Image (tube, rainbow, N blue to C red; front, side):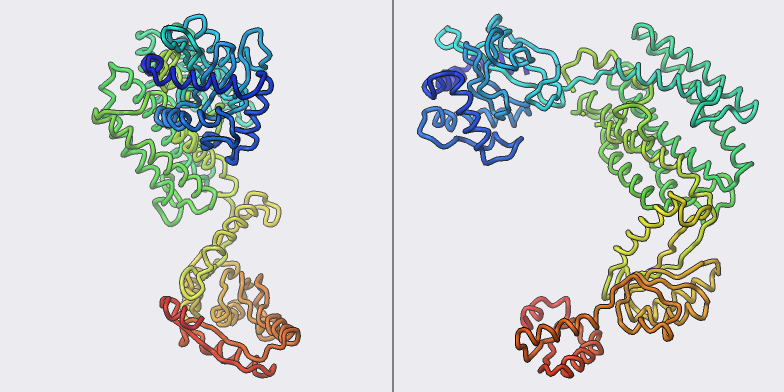
Length: 638
């Protein structure tokens, strides 16, 4: 970017553009205050494009020369901004007036002289202007600091003087791309170290939400792990030399080994006391978090040079990570029988988090594979680390602010980021991983409760496939009920969903087969099609099970003697519809109705019923039908 400014400042085209804007600025109004007000009204307030897109306006309305100059040069510098991904580009005259900018934020047309009237003269952009006036033939760099017109975001500026025929006429300035925002690894290391110190203190001596070690062997393992951490803390506090870095890498391997031993011992004791606790699943979620953090650390080491030996482990870690992730989603058993068994993830919240983690991992994986095989990588080190941070966060939660990784990984990145102008792709993956790990390790209260299963045939396919909506609502409701523990304290409600295809024979077969396989269902729920509700209502009565339909609007089901087991959430539609049509007939003098339907073989009975109902009201009735898959037939009947 410094090289670009050197080349651009030497081009006659830039000098011509800045000179033309200066002449047009002076001619626009009599004073700078009038120019500021009028130009902000023209290019910001009356600009038809929304905030963040003001650059799309090539010229404002009006006869002034400024608008013609703007139309001539603005597309050129907007294209430069897009091509180089600058946040903004600025022209100043020597009086400190910002006579042109691409994005037209609230700094546009204001003044940046040190003793001038501009309210942003002490900002980074004001410093950039004054630095270029003092050093017009060099490239002046203003470091990152919050900038008000950019909504408080960190901003850094490069500036240089512009000469015309050897005479200084103004200042050219760029605001660096957002992805160049620095990563404060030192602060992250400090925050992470303090958080880990607090975690060890709580787990060793007891502190909410932790409890003291439950046994002497576990206590010894925890204190041994804490000792290693204390040694690492001393390294973090010292200078980040290569020797210290190598020492941290070696100690981190010991730390991981001791942590695994502690996890296994805790898991064994938990299983012995509460076999229903999904400890193995919780440990696997934590293991995948650790794998991602290990991958991130190795990426940083390889990228930094001198650690190519870690490349081979990346491919192995990818395989283990994806295998673990498949187990977390799909499980490896039908019933929990052994300590290493993992139940399928069925909750809406858990599946959603896994989907987010999958998406974050999909963005990160190609970069890991390229680095593993030594392929060329175009992403900067900062962007790689930030992408993996998001992936870990999706599995673990928000243990540290802003998706920071563990202190060990943070330490490895400190010196590599402190003075770099480069910059963003490991963050999304870490953030996704953190959320998944937190979810699996904090939902044991509901997953270990006694399950109450509802047999739930739903029309996932067929003539009226509303089952996907039913399923979403059912999962959401059961999640709230299970989490709040107000309606069914001590129990976990669970829908066992089947596709009844909106077909009465399929629905009946589902109920009969499911009840033959196990008789632990506490009720029948779901169903939306009238033709399915009728036979299943009879079955529910025979089985002495409560029956709740999520739709089934036929008025027949209001007969509590004929359908004693049936309750429904659906609204009766037929009788109100007939009443409404009869009212409209009286209001509008209607004499004839057309009944339109799909496949006549499927809807013929309903069409004949409606025909009789409407004829009884005195309507002339004509029915027309078309197969749903034949568009021309549908157009024809319309």
